[in-house]
Length: 166
Ligand code: FES
Image (cartoon, rainbow, N blue to C red; front, side, top):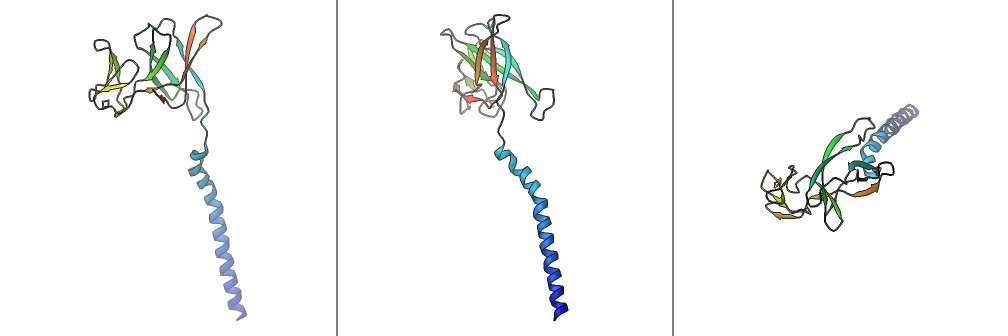
């Protein structure tokens, strides 16, 4: 009886130990899986460039290098932005990604509209969807314009955040 009890005790303790080790080993894996839920993206302002030469009323292509989230010193990707300067002094910074199936749209001067070549989607100069299948306006970059004290030029910056909608 005493041997059996001892055996049972050892079996239970072994099971308990194995369970504790299993729990301890799973904590890092759980942390890895759940960390994206709690990660906060650092907001950064990315320089697009001087915009004084961007013509009013003509959407103009510029590029912005997105920082590498893994910390590498090289940009992760280069994104196209369309700068739209209006005669009322406002500026919009539009993404070129179609809201239908993410094809690249481009400004079509003959139409005076943004055209998506994939399915013929059309957007007006403010990025509002006005024809074809796109269900929503073009995404719009959060942006700001600062004055470079050295060159005296107005410089456009966009956030590395996801785009906001028009
Ligand atoms: S992807 Fe642009 S219209 Fe379909």
